[in-house]
Amino acid sequence: MDRTKENYLKLAQAFKAFKMPIFDMTLGNFLEADQFEVFRFGKNPVAIDIMVKMADLDFDKCYERVTFFEDDGILIPVVNIHILIEAKKIAGRNKDFDDIEHL
Image (cartoon, rainbow, N blue to C red; front, side, top):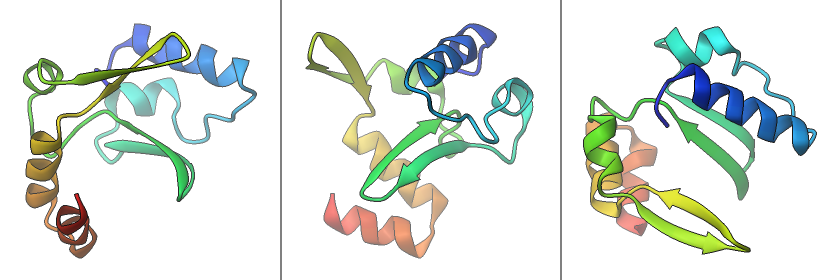
């Protein structure tokens, strides 16, 4: 997700509509805090990851390759699997390598 105030306000509105807390996803953290690359809500296997940075990959170039799925009339953008694998390789954590084996 691109780090813009407009996107943050849309997220905040959606979270409010579903009565979900935003925890550390404040406007300041969303827009500027480098330590927050992913905001996770929930716990596996039911979790939502909102990614604002992806392993030094360019957001606009990645977004050009997004696949959209429709569910109940809502378009849901999903990162391209090849880009996701590249990001996991760059991150280089054991969990990421395990994820790559299962993708």
